[in-house]
Image (cartoon, rainbow, N blue to C red):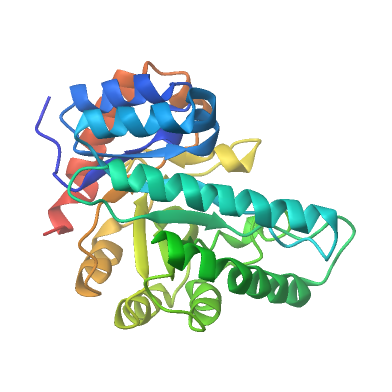
Amino acid sequence: MTTPHPRLSINQATIKYTTVAQAIEVVKAAGIESIGLWREQVQEAGLAESVKMIADSGLRYSTHCRGGWFTAEEGPARVAALDDNRRAIDETAALAAAGADGSRAALVIVVGGLPEGSRDLVGARDRVRDAVATLAPYAKDQGVQLALEPLHPMYASDRSVLSTLDQALDIAADFDPEVVGVTVDSFHLWWDPEVLPKIARAGAEGRIASYQVCDWKTPLAADNLLSRHYPGDGVIDFSDMTRAVEAAGYTGDVEVELLNQDIWDTDPAEAVRRTIAGFDTAVAPYLA
């Protein structure tokens, strides 16, 4: 196996069926220096034990996935969502502090889609802004950056009413960049003809919290959520986007996040090996 690029991080979604301990073991065995975990596995292992495992691993902690899901109108569901996001912020702070070299504390935020029965995209986005305003002081106190992630427009109804970087940046603009930033994800943004100047804007505003990469290939899976592919296996040209992120001043880890049933059914070590190979060919040549 070739030596992985030092900025490559494996997001646990790529090896979904691993525990925290197994994910750390596979990533370390491959020579990768950074990892991002998902809340479900962290909660299953317990936060204190997960923190200990990250500290013992010597890995950087690239992102915590995920917060958000706060587009509901006022009521018990919205209160519960905000409370859950505070817990996610606490998890992020603890895990990032345990990471090597003072890992940045970034909580990826998938804001949520339209509430059931609603057609009001504008209202849902306003409630996202309100939720971020509610959470930002707590995130600041915990040293956590909320990384708003715009998703491909096909997810606007059920997963994210933010579909472009500008929409995320417009919300983030009300807050300190160290508290509210954005996630740049190739799968969700590659289609946008204005994505490069939007990345430049994000960089000028100091708001790129995470760069995530995977590839796009059609036909999409029956469940379109599970349509991500290894870098280099689809149609995305990573050169311009990666160069733009670099030019914008981002120097952090680059996560590969693969939601794909065939990849999940692959042995985790093999999935990581193939991730390294794809990243080395499609992404690494354009990184510093």
